[in-house]
Amino acid sequence: MSDTIMSVLMLTGAVLTGGAIYIFRKGDRRRALLMLVAALVMFANVAVWLVPVKDTPASTATE
Image: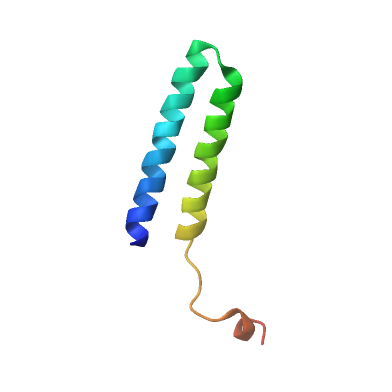
């Protein structure tokens, strides 16, 4: 299930980026910027979820 969500987020981010470029060329810079920000947030969410972490719990890592 997680893989499907990550794939949908990546595809949506790519579509938003393409749409932002299209809208920017038409002259609506504010909407294009908002679309780019939304795409960057989606890409950042995927990056955060895919960063590897250690298997130790946080409470035992400080001992």
